[in-house]
Image 1 (cartoon, rainbow, N blue to C red):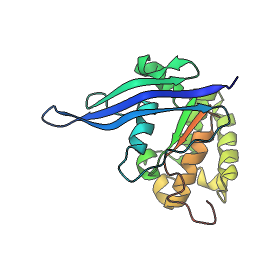
Image 2: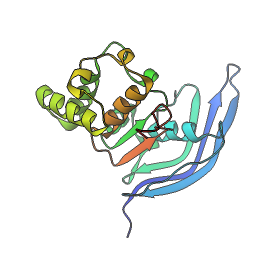
Image 3: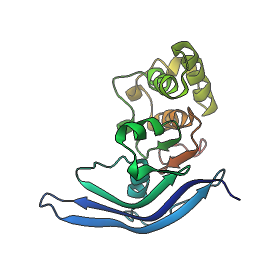
Length: 192
């Protein structure tokens, strides 16, 4: 018997334009992911890979998007959950590494504060313990001078460094499901 972490059935996503017309952008996507398994969504640019990922995470604007089908994480139907419960699941049981880290990191918070905040909120760590763990996570993703980097703001680092910050943040809570949307795009070949 396999330990199914994620089951996506008949996923459909549509966006509403200014006139109120719905345009389908993802049709009939179904797959399952077992614990420890790696699955890749492959397709041309604009084929709906990122939109499917955002739909699974429930990060699309509900006012202008419609998600249909079934998305089940650890036997829990995500489409039926209130936003407050989804917020608790994100970062804890599921996490995403976004393609563009500069738009995902808070420009007004230091890197260490952003990673520590995740650890305090989802793993119940003390602020001091979270800072120590944040430094360890940066070292894990091969950030040089990790302790110093914790004190920096996102704009003070290169795109590749910011991407590694995002990877560290996504790994922080040891999620059961990790979605990576082109996570190596900004990384130097020697780091990939």
